[in-house]
Image (cartoon, rainbow, N blue to C red; front, side, top):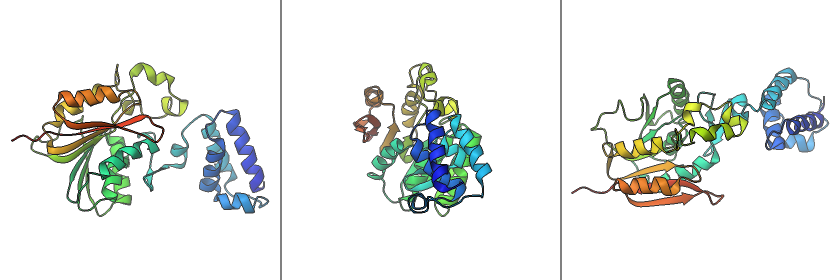
Length: 282
């Protein structure tokens, strides 16, 4: 089969199975499994392909069931880095890059960073990659997720001071352990809404990383409530949020005495981040 026919046939199959962005997914699958680049598609469309077609076909079948592309190829791009992913972790998304970019504005050399609900480690590792002499700690309840995060750190920031802790939020942290920045992309989808999500998320991504209980705010409340013990005065607390949670999370932080609390929008003009500064105590 020639390159152009593989591309056309795959796009057709993806469209028949209502795959979002079928052309993009086809190009990524062809490059990953067949070594066919975008340039090959444009210039060498009549090139015969014989190797790895069976493996490619099996991967296409998986995608047609709506399994996330990133799980099939085993990686996801985030902040210019390639992260290993598996069904143990959420797929890193470009929306979350807004959170990282906001923190980088306030990140200084030597800062201590706590990433609560770290998952693949994409937030913490990206912050460590683009900073100097910082110390990073990632926390997650899932041991399987932490294995992925540890692998990503070993590959992407091998010379940085990054460690990971298996804990139910702050449970095993010492109260004297203070951080300059606490960041989190916690589970924030209301339980009843999960069944309405697109199949890639609803059927394949880890439920414990999605479910924010009845109102979606449970983990924000827990983290804000306990952050007093672990964040230095003048330190930054920053969250990714759902599009309709900005005012609720902002008010929660104000209620606990945070200053300069603001909501940051993403490139689609949707509320995406809430951040604030812990008050100084004289």
